[in-house]
Length: 430
Image 1 (cartoon, rainbow, N blue to C red):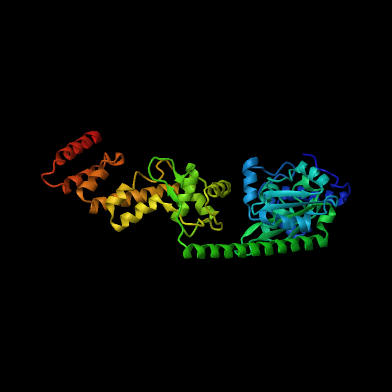
Image 2: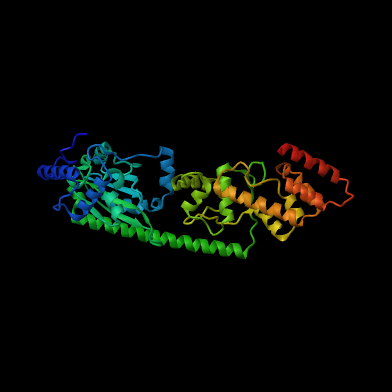
């Protein structure tokens, strides 16, 4: 890929760029980065060389399709504070040679706004929404390096490890959750030398402070609303919406049919009323390598389903139900715990979401089925145990049928049919 020799507006120090390009070539060959570089740049180049990033060919990855990206961006923690960022940074930059980018904690750009001429030029190096500008993907840049170091950074021209970015300069600072301290993302200004002027760093840092203050207020308002809502729910009994997930019927929330995935998520959240973090919930929902990104997109769709059903929205960080649901599986579990086995069996048409392979649902399904079976074996009267054994899923449960034979009265007319059934089980298992 040819190295651009002009900055975005036509100026730039070509001799400095040439010296830095030669220094980079020597560093890649020898593995030794020159001490003449600023320490922050030198350390970043060393990471890029260890990561085998090609300064001529590396391009940002775009690993989400358009619909998934839109949903992910809309659900991101920084989406509600975009008006603050636009007011402080974007408004008035249309002809000032600056582009403003907001990225997530992994370096994926979520919004790229500002000077339309520069934005078109920036598209040539994939400086666009959805692209991965982390250090691991593209090498030294203000947004990626700011996230790697968790502090504000300025990168000028050929200090970028990737040569396609040499005509550009940038300033970036990370944004944190004011309540937990967790890294949420990064705010970046990219463009001409104006992008690394001293006052630009102050402007970006002040914007980060304003954004974190806005997030703190939003968190406080959410906490107050949640407290008031829970207080009202305690004061006034509210009829809970039913969640039906037992047996082969289509899962339902009240009168609304649910997709299998939404039924899985609601079941798990109902079983964990204190909430689940995104990574833990993803591990319980998805087989293999769980993806919090995929989960967040699914949660956006689930919120729309809850709204249509008249349910309050899900709470976040951690994910939890805003109002308790009346889950048929939980009712059966309570009846088993109370020893009301006849009623438990009447309300148990079959296992929890029998077709689900979600790890968390499989565990719940096996736990409830095991508790019910063990209670039946230990305490159920003969007629209840017989009704349980005659369920399709227990037809070949030899231990259950032998236990039934033991509890049937000696003169029961059912003993002969139980013995005959045991013989069929033995024949089938030979």
